[in-house]
Length: 493
Image 1: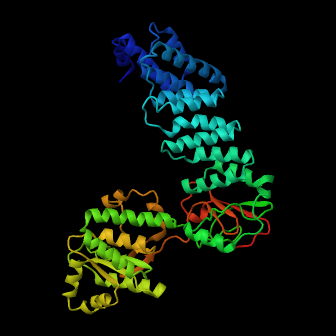
Image 2: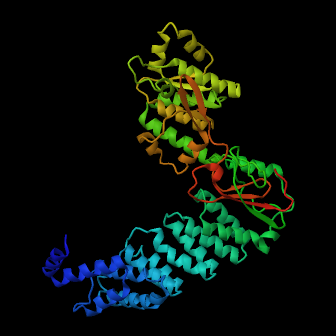
Image 3: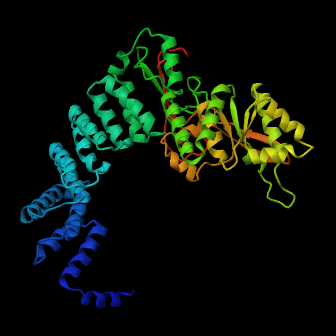
């Protein structure tokens, strides 16, 4: 639309539409002065909630500018208080209103009011959002009010929200600055569970703590190594959670990690972190419950009992996925040779036969083929082939077996369809990273793509040292940066 047409269109606007048009422009340009002038020149200063929110948004976005900060706070509160007093009986702000005013309160240093505003989402029957609580939490954290910051965190958890890196970093910072070593330890682990790599500002907070005198003083001189190892095993590897180990000055280095998982600074071995035992059991129960709903219950219960009695496998094979791999050509069908190659390769690696899960209908068809009957019958005799019942979905069976037995799963299935959406597990992706083995056949040559030798997540070693990955753009694992944090004279465990 050219400028002449825009002028003609504006000439047709009524005063209310003209106000909205100009306010939208102020919002896009974040022009506080123009927004104030527009409001003060308006013959009808009573605002709709939409217009009030737009003005409050402009105010909250002007807080970072020292020249407009005080004016933004003053004008924002004036608007909110006036709107609330004029419409006290019917006033119902939405979440955007409360968040904007909470930001103004935080900028003013009034964390208590910011917290009251965020808690009022319940009063107004609004769905809570993390951003509404951020202003109070950041205000308390920035002002060294650790206990009040923890109170905000507890309230956030009580409404079912999960803290993200900015909030956890703020809590870590106030805990470190107030010398609360147990809280620092707690928030390092919460960060470990919440993010894969930390950003630069969070890394600075972590470095500041470990460079401080308090960090050098805290920790056990003697600890039960067996207890630590058992805790690491229970937790799935990569952390023990038993508290600070060792004492003395920390050495912080920027490092990288070699392809085999060795830290290039301290030579410690990082691990491929698994979900913990409790999560594993919960995961297995979730899969079993869903399978029982959708499969014939007696059939799946029979499979569960069979797995209980045959639990020696280190790998489960999705037989259909492998047998049908790259078979979409005229003579294609089900490639037993591909399946046999995978089974043999897994046996050669561990000297244990894997469990092949294949639909019973497919097993019957293979047994009718005289050229492969002996091989398939041998698998059955060795109890390494399980035929799932007619009308069943193989996916439930091989997934349950792999989870329950805590073993590898060989499949190229990305596990993104409705079955896996039903699981809805927060730890499903972590489990896949640790357990899924993908494969390729190039000119009939098999390559198994094993899980990575280590996970790109914060790790706590059995000797008390820490390795913290830094988020960045590098796609090559060997180029990604880590913080290597060890005690002086520490030895590898």
